[in-house]
Every structure is written in structure tokens, then in C-alpha cells.
Image (cartoon, rainbow, N blue to C red; front, side, top):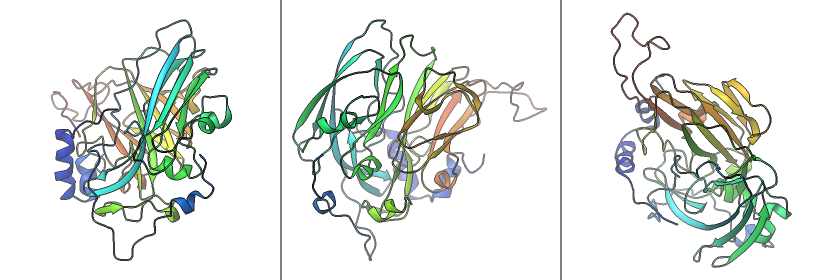
Length: 378
């Protein structure tokens, strides 16, 4: 497992957002304008809100918790079943939700969402899960793509410093969530322990120019969004299903001009987006502002005929959706949950920036004026 140092964009993000409120940040982003525990609760006492405000922000174990959406395995290019050796490590570490706001996350391989596993139908997977020494809690992994007790969770439950190995055959195609499934699974998933496993059909998926991989989830804390200090996990807010943040990849507004920057693609590229919905509780109304889901694979189904030209699609917690989009004009495509208070106030926004020359016959921002190169809108 590799933890990268903070990028320049990440440093800029801290400086900027410490001096800007949520509305200002969104304006700059171009959004406003356009195991085995007998009693897990007793072993891990539930944090309670503090009467005198939050504790000061904690020191960071990592400068970044958000997975890079461009880092995912290449498409399947083999025609016969293969055997895969896969290792994952569970971590517990403190990182920032946004500048000055720290939280104790749980992850697979140190990032949110956990790494995508990509195999072909009929392949065999030998998976080893290690619970990092120094962690406080047991962890495991439940693959929704696995026939077997708990999707593998029963046999991968490990205490800190332990490892467990299972082997399974990928028997049905589709893209499926995986997540931690200990008794307090809602806490563990909310704190970041989810990802996606893609089982490609024998013929593979249609070719595209680029693929991206995101994960949506809720964070339930004892503070308010934007309130500086250390946010402890709050079980009462989770029971009420009232999250403090709704995030893409663990952080608020991570993939905007105020974060690590938008994800850049070139005009004319066909882009496939995987959207893993960890939840643990809320339905996502997944929408791309300035685009539509030209081809949409609902609930991770890759063998039925896909839907076409979908504007906003429900993505249930514990599922993965796939959308393919065309990019005929330059400018930002804003990835949101169309329950829009989650965008404006809770962090659920990412930007895909399409670079290239204007196409006034498709979209003309200045009718009657000479056309020129498109300016970047972060």
C-alpha cells in the first residue's frame, strides 16, 4: 500500500477553503452559478456530542484519503479463465474531510473507495485480507459478487495484525459493491470501507476512450459541515440517517478547482463512469450537470440492454451504477446527487472538465460573437 504526499492542488485547497465559506467554495467550483464481537457497542463505545464544541483537529496519518478516480484496472483482454492473487489491507487513519476538519476513517488499502477488483466471468480469485497491526477493530470483506456465507465476510473476519485468505469463482457478471460487514457495518461502511468488483462478461464491455471510478457515501459526525476541529463519529445521527457530509471518495468537494482539481478529459472522448454507492443509508439521485447518461447500466447489470439518455438515475446504497457519456463540447460536467442540499451544503460534487475547442453549432455561449477556445471552468 502506498500513501502519496499531498499534491500542490491539495495544499491550495487547504489555503483557499480556510478563508472561504461553503457558498464561496461552490461559486469558485462553478456550481452555484451554473466478525466476532459479542457486544460491539460495548467494546467500541459510541461517541457522544460534546457540549463545549469539537476537540481540536487531530494530526493527520495521511494527507489524502480520496482515491484517484483515474486509477482503476485495465479492461479484460483475455478469453480464457484466469487465476488472480489479490491482497488488501484494512487501515484506520485520520485525515481531513475538508481543510481544518479531521475524521477517523476506515479503509481498504488506504483510500476511499477501496481499489476496484476487475476480473472476467469464470475467473478464480484468491483474496488475502490483512487487518493492519495497530488498528483498534476487527474488519472483514463482503463481496456482493460472491456465492458464499456473507459474501466471504464470515471467513475473512480478522483482528488487528491477522490475515485471512479465501478463494472464489466469479460466476455471474456485473459490477458489485464490496464492503466491511462486521456487526457495526454501518459505521465501518460510512467511514470508508467499501469499493467495487467488476466481473466482465465473457465478451467484455464495449470499448471507450476513458474510464473513471468514484464512490459516494455519508459521514455522520458530532459537528456541523465546515466546523473546524476533530469530528467524531456520531451513532445518533446515523440512526436518524442525517449525515453531516455526503462525499465523493471520502472528502468534501475533492474533485473541484478548490480540491485536487477537476478530472480532465478531451473533447470527443467517450467516458465510462463507475459510481459505487457505499451508503450506508441514502439513495443517490445520480446526475451529470451539462450532460446525460447516454448509456446507463442500472444496478450494475451489464448483460441486459442498457437504458439510454437518462438524465438522473437512482443508485441504491449497496450497488454500483455505470454510465457512459459523450463529450461533444468543452466545459465542466458536474457529478452530483440531485438531492441538491447534499451538493450545496454537504460536499457531494465532483467535476469532469472537458478540454477542447468550442462547438457553436452544438452549444454557443455567445451567439453573434466570434467563437474562440473554451476557458476552463473549475
